[in-house]
Length: 325
Ligand SMILES: *[C@@H]1O[C@H](CO)[C@@H](O)[C@H](O)[C@H]1NC(C)=O
Image (cartoon, helix red, strand yellow):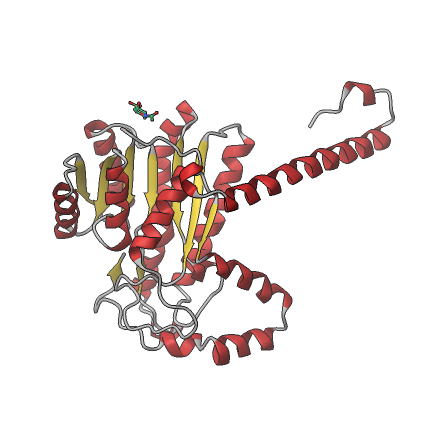
């Protein structure tokens, strides 16, 4: 920040104080505007909002062969985007492109990628740029969960969970961000989890990678904004359990699992409206401050007695193998 010309004759401490006061004043006025804007967006139905035009844009979805990823692909195909699917499973990619074809969208391209392999990511990324073009919207959606208490987690599975759930984000973003920076336009979506806001039973690997997703999103967003890349949007999506089979068996006591279509629709909306942080369901936002404010013993009582978190997680079956979603 530079001092206003009128302040230059003052001595240094006084000038610093005035500058700080000025910044605070501007912050207050802008904040009022942002709060009103946010209220306005909450009240206004979505169809009246100005939405981003993604027609013709390249949307790449990791883990697009299954679960929510497949539905995101269909949603963006409906918006006339060009869809690129990355998945480790060839059959799953085919199922997604068949689904899109059934709805009349034939411009979906799929690539078999093991995103725990950095070299493979770079190689496939170069191939995508050559085949389809630069990626406009990158959706880092792929993730795995094993859901075991810490002492039962295999070293290999822990490592793989990190590689897929967070380390891969570095390589995919490194591959596609340079072009976004050169045109100051683009969108990066990080699919985190409510487990990245509140750790839970059997998730010492999974939750830690999702916490890392949040740190990654917030810091990269800061880097971009601080260096003037204000038209590269970033959205962080933190969903509660989704009913895709990824958390099969888990029976939450308080809140039913989210439907995959709902999550895909909210991710689409987050992109179209440039939402920065989207918690699903939104009511979970109210829980997060509690863990900072309430006594730790009370939090445990709430988690174990009222929400019955650990108990419901112990019913986890997943997809039989380590599941990708
Ligand atoms: C959206 O973008 C496409 C491609 O750039 C363009 O052809 C189309 O007219 C745009 N639609 C609207 C409603 O602006």
